[in-house]
Amino acid sequence: MRHYLKPINSLLPVLLTALVLVGCEHVDKPKQASLAMLTENAAGYDKTQVTTRGIVRRFEAPLHYWIEDEDLHRVEVFPHDRVALFLDETVLVEGHFRFSYSEGRRLTLTKIKRE
Image (cartoon, one colour):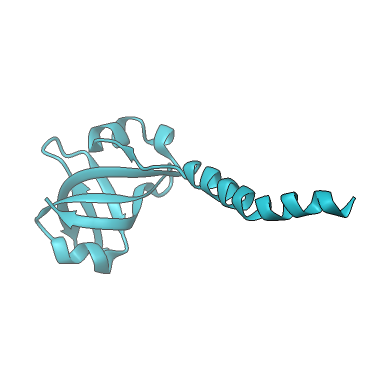
């Protein structure tokens, strides 16, 4: 019976690698969504990774930052210290989108870059 274990033991690293690679394929890729889509269907994008673009804006009291498009569709962006560097610039952002009736539309950045 022990001679059967040798082929299985030699295949074990290959099987584990295959399982890891299959698991990596299941990672959610960010959904591309315009700011209009995120504002008009915010609940549909809640708790998803998204990529979108807009111009960075700021309001002082209370301090907060958001991105907006030409039609004033807006999403607040966090963390403030990362987005503040791009004030009044068009940016492409990727992040975790959240929506609630009490806190509105919020995006926590994973990536940001100038357009």
